[in-house]
Figure 1 (tube, one colour):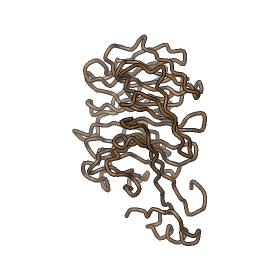
Figure 2 (figure 1 turned 45 degrees about the horizontal axis):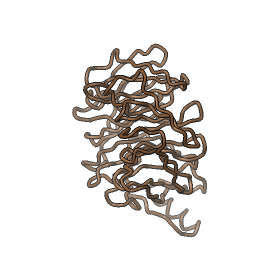
Figure 3 (figure 1 turned 120 degrees about the horizontal axis):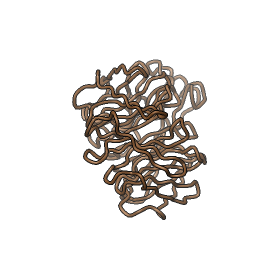
Figure 4 (figure 1 turned 90 degrees about the vertical axis):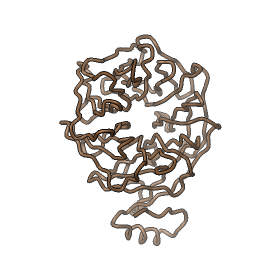
Length: 341
């Protein structure tokens, strides 16, 4: 059952109505914010400055949006055809992003000053996902099927180290996150596996048991339940993997052809993911730690193609719309009157 979209109701009516929704004391409102035409926003993260920062894959820019929806776009210092892909907040107070097209890692200060780092990254690697590691460095995936297949580490000063030992040939690692065990966990698109890399030793372990053929794992995040959760882009499933490597897949409630991509742990204790297919998908999904899925589409424009998703400093959910060149915000409304459980 899809929750109703609330805009203006009395507090009493909101409270009563929410309590009737199958025991889920929560509703939502979607707001969309437009970017430059053809921006193709992709990755998105909460910045240290209280704003949201995102990449513009086709626009060749980094964007910043305030919680109230004011957008600023930055292009100076970004190489032509860089194709900025994913972005994360770094330990140094800056934002770090991958440049898939030119095999570099970019750094942008909250004021918009960009520096690019390419030394030490193999030509044709295709840097894709990126996250801040527990060791004070940034970790990224090299997704190119032919020239990548590695995990990279870059220090805040720009020194790069690549790790390939243990990663199967043509695995195409893409999403990456920090796990509850202090390791880095990543998805392997072509390899149909979930990988784990120790930040101290660089040792890699891969897990494939329990992942269906043709799953095409993509996004990954640490859940509030102590496990890792990932999307299966072609499998139309959400996967859960324990720190010991036990995988469970969930498909009930996800539309066929939804093409789930980005995923994040929400402020409500659930996992939220983006369904990027403009036809069958075009929704934001929510999955509980028990595997119960709800899909939301009200307020999301046609052919929006949601891809990246994160929790903002305002405790709302923010997502990128590839097809619509917009940033979306989901305001969660809880029956207890607060912005979280």
